[in-house]
Length: 306
Figure (tube, rainbow, N blue to C red):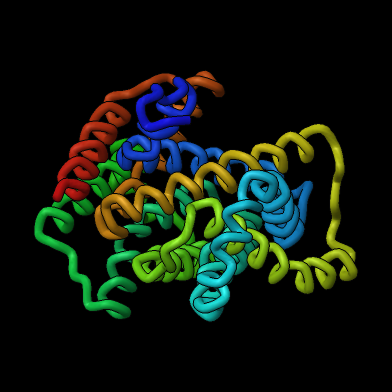
């Protein structure tokens, strides 16, 4: 194809999408919200490490045919950055999801959503510790506004509900998962210059391999695994949307606007979760939904601007 020929419509659409960081990060939060809800729902069907291992193996196999030409070309660069690549695989894929799924076995959905709202602070902490990058005043104000909106939605406008929340080991695991993912988000600032498919395929494959020994131990210990239609559809969703697509979108969003401006989009996860409850579970929209949505969207807008 010569430079004078028009770009095929499907490639033009992909090119446009790849340069829309706010849309990419919003879709990422949507997919991860679904992952949180489904992960909690099937926690009795699939053991946590098995869920993580199957998720990443499946995502890697889905990505490999598209990534293979780029992996071959970028292999010298990837090999020169092996320590960093393994750190990205461990923090963003293996440790993060194992801890999250483990935590979902023991905690309430309310606790999980509250803990997710601290995601931007975890990212800001690690970017400051590792690279000396500090939040701007606008980012601080935006995070505060969107976190307030998250609390309004989750607590249904009743701040006294905070007193009834019980902290358990599942909460600690979920917060640990966020801390680990904060490292991944910060380290993405130092990612090698490769094709996005090379980066996601390599780290996904390594992350899957890291979970295999623990998965063997989990199944050998007698952890129950129920292979029914719910399990299969849940795992298929996890392979495609919160894994392959969400990480491609998240990585691209960070590449375009940086981790501190991308992190406030974590706060969209409880928003999407509540919308799912209204649409799919028939819950009635209330005043606190609209108030919370307005605060979250305003906070994300303020924090994600230059």
